[in-house]
Picture 1 (cartoon, one colour):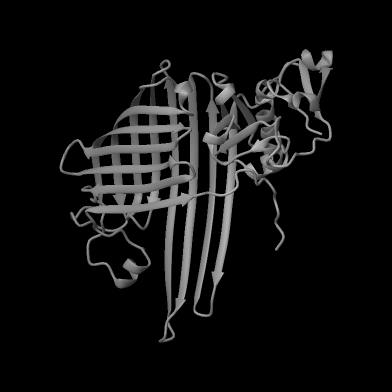
Picture 2: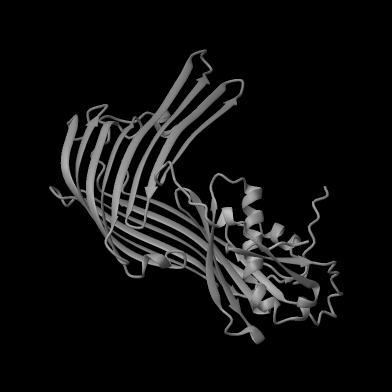
Length: 413
């Protein structure tokens, strides 16, 4: 039995009666579907919709479904894009469904499956699969129709989290713990956010001479921001953060920056395409734990940054690219350029290529501690080390081939 429940005053319920799949070479009444869902349990969807013929490549499908996921402070939002192919050409539409972040993983995937199947109804109605369904209409109670929702939290959503891990060996013991919180208030015109984090790592190593070496890495952070919408393409805001970080030699690091952003596309299209340009100008105060290589214990300076973000999520895959440039306004030689690129692209049927590439050109390390770093500092990354750049690159290929109709789930052994 499969149940669909649209969010209307009348629920449409389709009951599937004893559908037995035919052999692979005799399926005159099939609907071939490819579900491309990033962040979903696709196996669960396939096993609970066996009346459909699930294929592994969009070129073989009658319906290609692309699902993108994003988050609001209180919900997971899934945007579903249905594209008809072959005799279903032109039957394209998009809609979104959201699920509370308080739901379990199983509750969310059940709800998402119902939403996915509802979207397939127009295609099913053009096949002989309709002979296997019965339509039942249920009417909502009058009490439900007239119910007025009131929000005692006034759109605020809060999250607290903690994590503890311990690794122990004969000569080595490592303890990590983390505490954090986040609060968001989001409306169509405003977004207010506060967040904080405390992270600590304690490492004890017994050395050959009987002495014990101890390393402590600690990070504290508090930040807040207020962003105002200025329409479908513009927004402005103010960002403030305070940080303590013994690895980077910060006893106190403070920044406050007003900002403005322009989006080339309507913000409502963010799940499928996005090109934004953002500019920040701010004031910085930095007090150091140890005297720096510039023989100072604190710094005050203005800074500015400009960033461009590009993101596309389409049926051929996704790409993301970000370029950010930052410099001190009192000394343009102190600057940093950061480039972040990620992509996964379908080259042809079954073959996908992925790449991750991050690059930083660094000319602004005024916080470095004076004096030579010890071998322990370098190996255990207890202290920031002077560098002109950082580079991280990864590439991958995957190729899927074989039967396009194998939907069986078998987890034995």
